[in-house]
Structures are given as C-alpha cells and as structure tokens.
Image 1: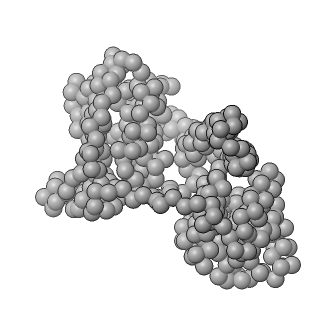
Image 2: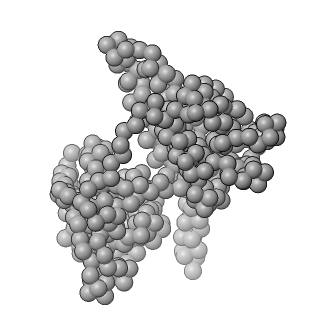
Image 3: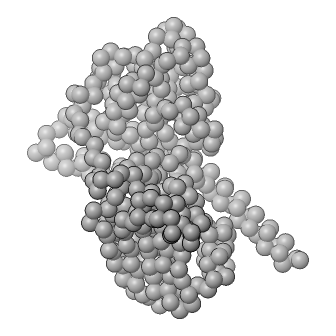
Length: 391
C-alpha cells in the first residue's frame, strides 16, 4: 500500500525533525543557562551591597525577576527536549493552575472563556511542576483547537477516593486517594474511533502543518510517569472532558512548606570543595561566593584539571560539585572515577542539559543531589549543605 508507506515515511521524517529540534533546544538551553547563572549571581552580589532605599535596588530586583522568567523559558526547552530528569516534589495543583492563569488566557484568545473550579483543600501530589504545567497547557490548547468559533473551557480539581468497583470499569485504575484534574470544553467533540487513537504519537485530526499530533501523547506520557491515568468522555457536537487521576501524597489536607533559612545558617566551616565547571564566568563567580561563605574551593575547568587537582590534594575533599556536561567528559562519569579513588565523598551536580540518558540514571541510582541552572546563591548553599549531610 503506497499511501501507507508514504504515511510511515512522513512520520519518520517528523520524528527525526522533532529529535533534531529537541537536541538544538537542549543545547541552546544549556548555554543560555550558564549565561543566566552568571547574571543571577552577580545581581545577588550587587543586591547585597545596596540598601533597599537606593534606586539601584529596585532596578537590580527587576533584573533578578527577568532572570527567573528567562530560566522558566529555558526549563520549558529542556522539558521539550527531555534532556533532564523530572524533579519530583510535593505539589498543589491549584497553585500550578493559578500561576499559569495569564499564560492560559493568552493561549486561548478572546473568544473562549476560561473558568476554574478548584477544591479549597486539595490534597498534595508528588510531581514535576514543569511537566504539570506542560500537561495543563497541552490540554487547554487541545480544547481551544476544538472550538474554532469560540466556547468555554472549565478546569476543575477535586479530591476523590477510588474503590475496587471503579477499578473494574477502568483497567488502569487502582484503589486509593487521588486528585482528579478535569478539563472540559464545549467544542466539536469526538467519536469513539478518534478517542481510541488520540494518545497515539503523530495522530491528529488537524490539517497539514497545523499540528504535530504529539500534544496528547506528551500528556499521556507525563500522566504515566506520575503513576496516574487519564479518562476521556466525548461525543460529536457535545464537547469533551479529560479527567486525570494522580495519587495523593499525604492523607492531610496541608501543603508541605519549606522553612526559610538565612545565609548565615548555610555557611560552611572550612569544608573542602572540588568545583568542576567549564564556563569561566560561572566558575569564577561561584568559587568567590563559596569561598566567602566558609568553604575552601578548588576550581577546575574540565575533568583533566579536576583529576590533576584531586591527585595533588591526595583526594582530601569533602564534596565534589560538578556540572553534568563537561567539554572532555560526563560529570557523573568523572564523579564515579573520583569515588573509586576515595569512596564516601559527597557529590552535588549542577543540572543543566545532557544528551546522555545514562547521566540521569547514574544521578538517580546514586541518590545524588542536583541543582538546576541558573541557581541562586541560596540554592547553591542549600545544595552543598544537604549533600554534605548525606555523607
């Protein structure tokens, strides 16, 4: 069948294009994150030397906010390229939806109204915030595209208890306490044939050039990675509702809140750090900042320099702080080399971009901590402190 062969060839070309775009996006994000890390660090230094009533303080604060916005953009590039592991933390989906409010309004346009019905005491889930944002945006965009003449989108959250009876109907379900996120639209709807295929990669009902057919595939993948499932109800002309079930993390109806800590509490006590970072501006900046906060820092630009310093100092280090991507090696591979020479040293990775899935497997299996670029001084000092505790 010639038409089938052509369809498969087109899908293969699309897959190769997506992979190439992913690699490009990940590489750009990595380089850009190094620049943002330096900007953020020097801005923090400047803020420490300026009083709040100084007009410069407000300007510097705006620079810091701009860095945060830019880092969110690079994080989306990294999520798209799948070049970083998911960072699972306790999440309240209501907060995620609220933070996305303005972006969702821009996505859907003026002829579609967006309403939310959020449970006031929503249980916590364990999830990756960036992936959850992507999931919600993809579903809202899918709903928007189903309403070319305008309509309504409703986003709802609720706490639900799934029992054995329910699980008999839905084979992917399992009993327990769950958060249900539902997104309903008043669009054109779908018949059963389309519903059965909507999560297939490359499947789309849109015309040529108007969609990749990957949006709902990504949603499906994210839900599965979060140990949940998704149900779809729709019929032609009746709109659609997507219900996503994610396991609740806590029995209590409370968010886990991190207690604020001061920089003084995070200061070191002379611990020795081997800092491996190829970007010169980042290396100089954080060598200075770590040194000023009570640590003895030995900086290396690549794995060869790191091994030379390690040998010269007879492995006398408390922590290896290493970028995942180095010009002459992989960060995790270098760390494993050093651990073989001197087991028990604490490890902290700077997580930017990596095109090697094995890097993330090493990080996960080793139980090592990592911080996402661009990181603040507080993030860095917290990461160092936590890594040293794990020793």
